[in-house]
Image (cartoon, rainbow, N blue to C red):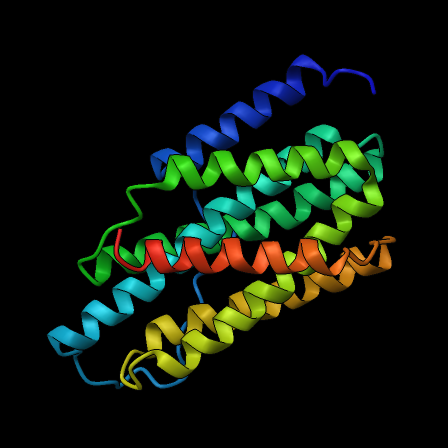
Length: 211
């Protein structure tokens, strides 16, 4: 496989720096709840919402790493553009969740560099195996993210309509990313790989809930 160009490598480094420094900016307006008259959150509700949004922010840190690595490793210019388009929407999610964490008086995960490095390695490995497998990782990742976003919608305090609006838009985008990857020729990953991904996801979300 040809080595990535210098411009591609610099773009990947820039993505990592922006993601881990908190300097990412959304290209779309943040979703606004239909009901803007919600009551103020109690302290325990604020802590729960903060923990859930921190988990979601970690997911977006991993998404940046995954798409960046896949863009580096694919040989297809068309597929690289697809990864870049999905990454731009994931950047919106990253910025939205970070902003909401500030509003909730919470913080991003202290382990974000570790999460980023792990996801980047997985994306690079998948891309080196082949585009079909790389796309398969996108599909399985997005399906698992969709499931945990669903669980967060059930766990969020009813009063936290601001976080709920963000998560609902994120869920819609993740479903579309999975469908796009399937149409592009994603291979279905073997069951042991899907189970390992689910286990790793549980470890990550369980840890990020607190740290």
